[in-house]
Amino acid sequence: MRPSSLSSLQNVESKTDVPFNPVVRFVQLTVRFLIRSFWSEHSSILEQRLELETGDRDRCTVLLVLKSLSTVEIGVEEEEKCVWLTSRETGVGNDSRGLNCKNCEMDCEGQVTSEVRSELKPKLGLEFDCYDNVFNFYNMYAAEARFGIRCSTTRMCTLTGEVTRKEYVCCKQGYALTSTVSRKRRRRGCTRTGCKAKLAILKVKDKNKYIVVGFNEVHNHDMTTVDKVHLLRSHRNLTESTKVYSADMSKVNIPVYKQLSLLEVQVGELENVGFVNRDVYNYLRDVRGEVIGHDAELLKEHFMAMQEKNESFYFKMEVDSEGRMGNVFWSDARSRRAYGFFGHVVVFDTTFNTNRYRMVFAPLLGVNNHRQTVLFGCAFLTSETMDSFVWLLEEFKKAMLGEPPKMIITDQDAAMSKAIAVTLPTTFHRYCI
Image 1 (cartoon, rainbow, N blue to C red):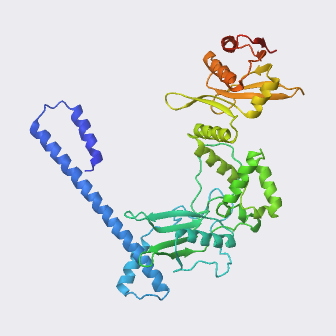
Image 2 (cartoon, rainbow, N blue to C red):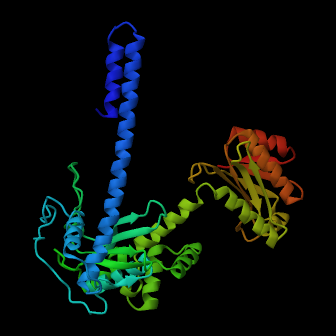
Image 3 (cartoon, rainbow, N blue to C red):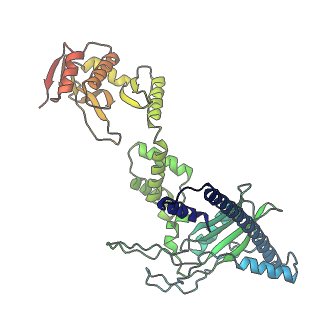
């Protein structure tokens, strides 16, 4: 009996109308306690046995590799035990469905082996200081052999947390998931063919290094053409200098596709760029994800930095009782100076629901002597209420340090009209057409 069956006993007890018997109840609780104790002890024994068996299998794998390299000698009985233990380990990409891919018209049962220089080809017993070096080495081999790689499985020590075993496989290992929903899809090539090519490494505690214990170079699919190897995911890399370059380009509103075209001209060919548009978009998405939850703090830090550069920069930010940003108003030195010359007439309008924060954007504009639009100040408001407009106009009067405008032009908003009557009683209020 397993612990999951105890709930059924409870259900039976609740449904039957048997009179309460303390002896029977005591026996039931005792049996239930013994079952739980036995199951927990049994499961811990299984876990210990599995951990010991896993450690023995890793040790046996290293012994077999060293024996194949004539580095160490082991007995016949120990060799048979090692072969038996290592054969129980599940191989990467094993599947009872075979190697025929239903989503691909090509025959996936062929064996393909690329001709690669011997110095780039992994060998059994090859040692590395860390698994990052293993990935870089295998990725160089994959680029020469014209296929992509990815990390498949990672085994870690439960006590120290260090990686003890790792496997890198071909990017076409496994099988693609087939959707049961019938809808029109664009025609694509076969992305997964159940390829068995892989590289397995194991950490040797004596040397504190990673040793190659398994290598299969046989693929069951055609290799990528030379002109498309740089498009494989493992061979694309967005360097730190490229990230800074892309960020600077984005500041001057240069789109990503034009950034890539410019880099292509600089390096000569698209193959030398090292990434595609999608990599830049993914990087910008990650950057935006890091900003979420800290955007108000970043805005305040930006305003404070602008104020340190120029003391004439003015801003005001409201914060509610829960620490969230409320209404915000700001005006730089140039806008405040322009108000001193052309602030007789102010145009005040709002735009709603044009940003992801669902805040009201309220610019205050004017016209100079060349009939050009000048900006006096900007604000983000949480709502289009009379209190929000009163707060904005009061902050606008504090920032300008001069006489209020002679005329203000707005749309026919009732809350805005009331706020102007309260804060600017001497200003002529006119509606725009």
